[in-house]
Picture 1 (cartoon, one colour):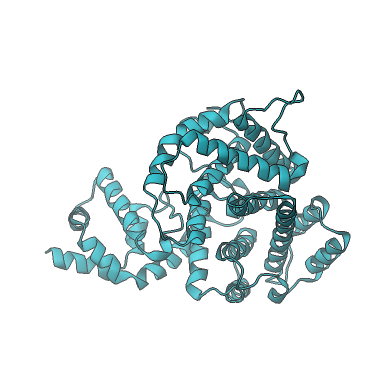
Picture 2 (cartoon, one colour):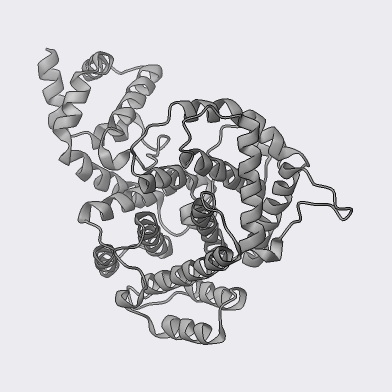
Length: 423
């Protein structure tokens, strides 16, 4: 499959068929829809403006970044269709996919009229739905990358807009949109974009210093976002003079996923710009409270952002010179260790109930484990950590969580207790 060649959507859907049907048939009912949505989106990086490929494809090393983003975006739309499919009837895969792609096409044609692609040829003949989807996604990604022009902050801003696409599509996909609703969704897109910039501006001012890259972000926003002249003037004033958390139009009653997005957008803005100072931590804590979240929610968002960046460090070239890898990893290990400490009894019970894990830990105390044994131990410990509620919906950095790091994260008294029981 080559995402730059005609027909790639149909080829991708063919590859996706088996896993999609399995997920539909084994879907867990009763989960919080917002948290399920977050669990789908968070690992992809779309929330953070850094889409990275999480799809296992043997050809992906030959794809350029734009092709990877197209695949991620398409896959995310499919995941949303899967998440919000409440039918108990057996589905016809290709009919379902054609209906989903038609929704994707109508969404972009209505909410982004500047990239509208007709479903009919100039002779009035119906075009292949999947080919239309290819054209629409190509135009959407091209629009984001051309506007960013290689600037770090501009690319960051325009890539976060893809999350807005995904969020609004999640509403669009299970409604029957008409012109009135289309106008509503256009306004919602503009409001989300405007609020995003306010969040980034407030975060940039958290330590009372504004860096040149942050200034470029605002300039790109002013030049490339279709908002009224008065709003542009107000946005510029906010950026020049700063704004308080109370000036950010987000309510505790707003959807959980939107509040979570803006919290993590603020976290990444502060994190990626410089070493995090105490005054910035104070800002984030206050912002977290204003969103109606608890202290644990803040820790979980910090873990989600830092874990994502550590796992994809080699792909995030723009961030690599912003902060030392060792410094980020130490902060992440400390933070995740504090969460694990709260659940040490549950962790202890889970380890004790895993005979293979107990034997490997016992052996590792006496002799050096083989690489294969370390990998088995690592995989089982990571799976065990996913039993902690806050880790069920975020991507843990499996590559980063080596055997040695996991032993730093699991409380020593837990390991000692397991060994005592095993002796």
